[in-house]
Structure formats: C-alpha cells, structure tokens
Amino acid sequence: MPATAAQKNTQSEIQSKKMTIAVSPSQVETSKAKEILTKLSSASDADRESAAEELAAFVKTNGVLSLKHAGIIDALIKDFNNKKSTGARLSAVAAFVALTNNSLEGQVEPFIIALLSQLLELQADKQAAVKNAAAEAAKNFISKINPNACSLTVPFILEGLGNSCKWQTKMLSLNLLVDLTKVHPTEFFVAIPEVIPVVSDCMWDTKTDVKKQATDTMAAICALIENKDIERFIPAVIACINHPENVPETIHLLGATTFVQEVDAATLSIMVPLLSRGLNERATPIKRKAALIIDNMSKLVDDPDVAAPFLPVLLPALEKVQDVVADPECRGVVQKALATLQRIAKPGVEVFTIEQKKVKVETSIKELLPSDIDEAFAPTVKFLNDVALALCVAKNFFKDVWIKALAPYAKSFYTAEDAEALAFSALNKCEEAVTPKDPEEEDDEGEDLCNCEFSLAYGAKILLN
Image (cartoon, rainbow, N blue to C red; front, side):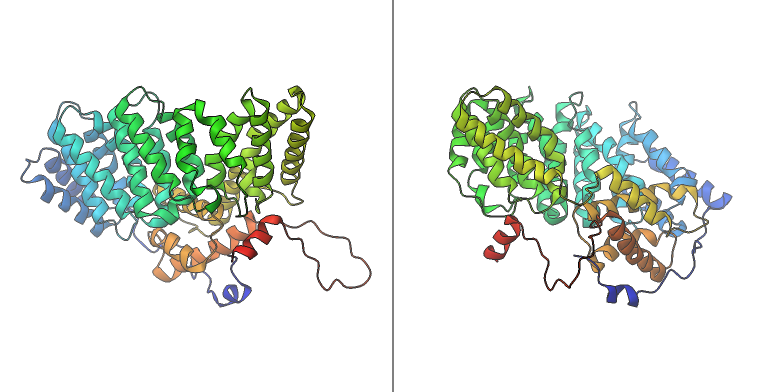
C-alpha cells in the first residue's frame, strides 16, 4: 500500500545526521569484557547462565558496538568452534541465548544472526547437551526476532540444508522453517519462493528421517498458500515431488479446475515445478493440459514481478513442446500459453530484478545514515537494507510496519525520534525507487475522463470481494 502524500508532508526530517552514542569502549571496559569472556568460557554448569547474563548486561551498558570493539563476537565464534572443550561450546550457546533475550530492542540481532550457522553445525556434536542447547537457542532466536526481519534468517537456515551438511543439521533447519510458519506466518510468506526448491531437494535425501521431515515441512509451508483454487490439490502436488509417476494424474485433476483467484508468487513456486514436469511427459494429452493450466493461471497473475522469476523456466519448456509436438490441437494450446506468458514478459513497465531492487534500496538508505557512522555498524546497515528489501519485495509500504521494522535498529546510532524519521524517509525513498514508472503517454487532443486497464486477475479479485 503506497504511502500517501499527506503522510509524507507530516513526517519530520532527521534532525542531525550525526551519531548520538559513544562508539568505542574504554580500555577499562575492554578489559572488563575480556574478564567476563574468560570467566564464561571456563564456567561450570552451575555458573554458566549467570556469566552469560553478565555478558549481556555488559553489552546493554556499553552499547551494541561493544560486541565488535570488545571482541565479544570473535570470542564467541572461537568458543563455538572449540572442539576440545564441551564447556566452551556450551558457554557460547549460553551467551547467544542471553544476548537474544536481552537484545536492546533488537539492536543485537544484526550482530548475532550469523551465529545461527554455528548453532546448526552443533547439531552434529557428539555431546547431547551441546546439541540440545544449540537447538533450543536457535528456536528461541526464531521466536524472539523482529517479525519483519524473520526472512533474514532464511539464508542461514537454507545453508543448513546443503548436500554437504550433516543430517542432524538438516533436521533442525527443517524444524526452524516450520517454526517460522507458525510464529511469523505473514512475514515469512515473502520467502516461500526461495524456500520451496531447497525443501523439495531434501525430500529426496538419502536419510529417511530427513525425507519425512522435509515432507512435513513442505506441508507446513504450503499451508500458508491461500489460493482456494489449488488448496485441495496441494497434498497431491507435494506427493508428486516424491513420486514423479503421479504427475500425469495430478495434472489431469488440475486440468478440470476453473481458476478464478489471483495467482501470487507462493502459488507459482509450488505449481511451476509440477507444470514443468507435465510439459516433459511423453503423453500428448498431459502436455496439452499442462499448457492449458499455465495459460489459465497466467491470466490471473496481476503483478509482472510475480511471474518474472518463473518465465525462464516455463517459456523454454513451452517453446520446446511447440517445436516437437505433432498434434495440432496441443500445439494450438501451447501457442496460446506462450502468447499469454510473452505478454506478461513485456508488461509495458520496467520490471526490476531482486538484485536491482537491492541496489536501489541500499542507495536510498545510505542517504539517511549518519555522516560519521562507525564502520563497526556494518552488520546493522546490512540488516536495515535487507529488512527494507524484504518489505519492498512483499510490496508492504505501510508506515507503521516500516517504523516497527527499521526504527529499532536505527536507534543503535540515532535518537528514537530520528530513528523513526529514518524509517519513514526510507519508506518514501525505497517505494519510489523500486516502483516502475509508467511510460509517458503522448498527449492527445481532448481529455480522458477514464483511461483504465483491467486484467482478468483484477476482475476476479473484485468478484471474489
């Protein structure tokens, strides 16, 4: 929802583009941090939690930059990787939990989010106490993170699903994705197209436990898809991932469906792999039905941004069928689907890729940062950029959302008032930067009282409402 001009006029500017906090702890404070870290690393089971809380209290007193300037993050990474000391690894996990629970309104999150990778790796630890503590710490972080930043955890979680990862790491990664669907369903929705292909691969894992959990995770993710047209077919679509022999039957069922609801990126992310397989089937009737479904669903895509990532998959597949299929009726259906997709591929306005949007967002936010910002704030700046990008991709341009999403992190270096001003200015700048401009139309004589274009998707939306 675009911000209104009235809102823009009532928003105050950032009063001073200067940092309002001290950036470096003193020598005494740095020495104090080292003492706490040494005590924490060698703490007994009974004293470990209190030592971790003392570390969190130190960060609260001295600000988030103490995590960098006092070497706290580096020390924790060293303890996470200490293969010789179980106590050191447990202490690093305890510190992560304490920092999560005392995150200074989220200001700590940009500095510790990358430690999720360490927690995932510890799932293969030989000590059950370490493994269980790491799992609980990761789940706790997912539940406590700013909802609008939850999608930033996804890249770290997906790393834990790589082919070279231990099966225990994959299990926790899959469980964390399920947690995201439960704790932050609305905010996680934007990440579904990124997640589904990786989880699909895990459904072919050699480890039975991973295959089962991946299937359950896929079901939890797909439960967030609100397209009523395919809702009842989702279990069958998921089953096709594990059982490709079911593709013809599922395509046949979908071919008898009348599609009326607007198609979004999440719907396409689960449907496109199935339809692509359908086009590769030997049977001509299945190719024809797959092309027909593509044609019907494509007409219900209201946003060119939604379709853009899937066009490189579907267009070549349809062109191949058009070239090789002998049946003229099938070829005609394929050509209609191709024509529909080609219209979507040339919407009349520029469609920005994720990378292009990322550059535009970074440029917009850079203009709002303090002129004297400390380089140690690099994690915070990256976090601001990534959260803003996620909101832009989701086309979420509500003022209150942007303030809740960005202001807590901007408070790391601005006053509360200036942090909110940064958030709202970022909304205005980013929305303008990532929204394609309509091509200028030639001025004709006379005045158009109404000059509108309505897509089938828009008409269906009106009817459903």
